[in-house]
Image 1 (tube, rainbow, N blue to C red):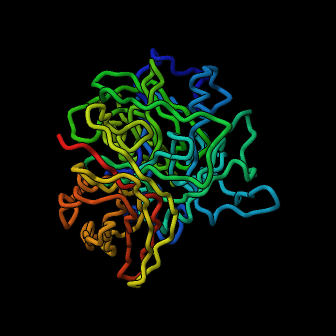
Image 2 (image 1 turned 60 degrees about the vertical axis):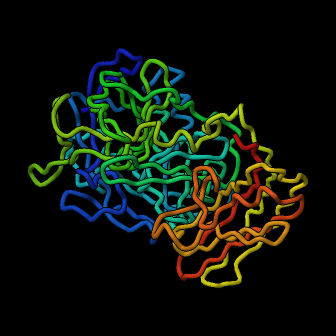
Length: 449
């Protein structure tokens, strides 16, 4: 039965939730379970089935036309449905979505809410920078998966009975690269991805930076449960804040809520990302209904803490007022050729002498298997320094600063005697299948303490 249109203002009724699917729930690439229903994903994203959902207490999910609070509507406006490019059929300046309904996809009983609505999303996300989307790490695992992932704004129900079936191309953004990513089965799970253009018609969401949410804090979630149009669900609270990298709450969420932003009910600031949870549906009489848990019952929903990813967001790096660096930056946006020693070569002009300063190398490189890569720096005087040599196994990307948070293979200490001139960065991909892009590289000259 649909709930009346009440909603979160910080004092919303406590704890309802629809959870993602067991520990594997929410994750797109986990093995199918008997109580799950297939959802089309791209070939690289490990085709599987979306997680079922669970309710904690009352069902607090609401369509946007039921929500009056402008703050919450603004947050929803900056929320994205994560879809597969294969589900979007181009037709002129729009995309046509395939016909499907939540009820038929999940074999839901007639009593289940939203059963007549479409469900095209496989994950959710939030705009956190002009061209950055925050989602769950298991939603975009590799660059290949990124290439076929689309982020859709305003996939929502804004009037009773009017469901989205056509998208304007202006609503749809492509995934260009993975800026930062982590996926731990019992820990942090997040991805920050760069999209193909700057978003100009809505604002990035503010993220909690000074401390994590605490036990008892009232929270709400905005996303796409089981792939449905945008839902806002409140009446929830943090149940446990003691785990490293994630907290546990009693949010009403489904599998498609993976990557959904979780927000403080009083301030509206993003405190985390929904990533894992309880089994969601149970079978009864030949159809399925949502699993019902008490507010303190079942395992709860796991939310990656903001502190796990905030350093990767704009303004997230620690300030260095006492020891600032002089930066010489180039932004080549070069594709790295696969499985060849030819690689790419980038020139970084440096117009100052090192003169006893530390020489560091800041890099932003996306790659779906960094164990394929060899990265070498040549100084103006011809000294060759290996920065990275096929380590990291199946981990993604190189993002950070060698000589600071990244450890180079060869020491950079003797570069402090270098004069001005051109540094050359070379990147080689020496194994097949995985590919990547060098977005930017900078030489930093920093005074030694």
